[in-house]
Amino acid sequence: MIRIDAARGTGGGLLLRGALTLSVLTGQAVRLTHIRARRTSPGLKLQHLRLIDVLARISGAAVDGAVLGAQSLSFEPRRALSHEPVIDIDTPGSLTLLLQSLLLPLSFSPLPTRLRLVGVTHAPRSPAFENIDWQWLPLLRQAGYRAQIALERAGFAPKGGGVMQVSIQPVGAIEPLHLVERGRLLRISGCSLVACLDPAVAARQRLQLISRLQGLNVPIEITSGAVSAPLPGAFIVLLAEFEHSKQSFFTPGELGHPPDAVANKAADSLISHLHCEEGALDSHLASQLLLPLSFASGESALTTSCVNEQILLTADLINEFLPATISIDAQQGKPGKMLVRGNGAPQTFAPKTDLGFVGMPQIPFDRVFQGSALGI
Image: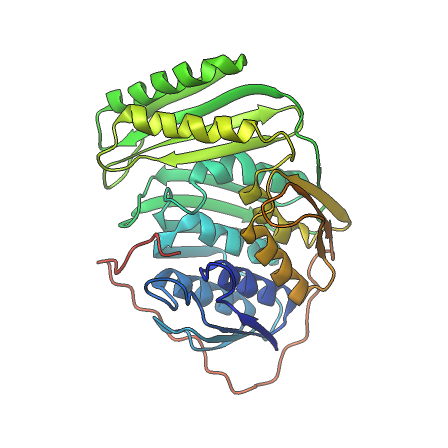
């Protein structure tokens, strides 16, 4: 059994999600302790129980400790991945983080899967729907993964209520990626959107963005408009397209902040990143690619403008399950290069004998969400 101290780093849900995904894909049991220990409300939240429930079902896992607030969890897959044609999940958590945890196991299941996910689609500290749709998924498709997503309704933290539809096709061999040069900036695109607010707010954000970005001397195409959502919200997503890569930037609106302030914050985020000339990928995207590329048939090479804590934690976790898979040539806070020595598609593992764990209990769902979806 692999033992993980989940309090490492910021003590959030990163190690929990990654460890569960790797456990399912490799068939290795895992024991996590100090789960989300550094958060104001530590332990497992409802969104984590939703993930555990699905992964336990498709892997026949025995689970011990899957209760709200628990800081320790044992998870042991007992058979090769099975298939569920339709999975419907209602959660107060981030749908993009949930999708990133489910996509790999469902990609290596025997038949296609459709997901209907209800929860938060746009929140601080997690990728927005557009980050996934414009940047992460296109790169995974380039490697050989086959998935499509659609936004039916936006959902903002902490209440959620957004809806994502997902289609995942089974895959065989995954190809490595080589993303080491960014190249010159070609264009800026993006969107300024509101929900349950006057569309003039989105238009004002757009005009301020164009004013701030026109000095980059590249074509700028930013749309403005409204999206369906159960509660008011506003956000901006920008996409910088380079010769050899793309980088996206999500900025949520905040209560009491005028449209110009939100637009300026989005523009500052993009412009400051453009000043970092090294690295084909931003640090968030680089960390999100490590696990999918660990199952490629060959070695991937990635460069980033900043090796952050998330990258180092993810690399260490992958090496716990798949030794010598990730190597990084830089210290935290510096530009760096990552080599991902792919292990190939997961192999079917033999069924496990009973080791005394209890099964995953049925998780009740209270539509009056408890706590904040920002506690991911």
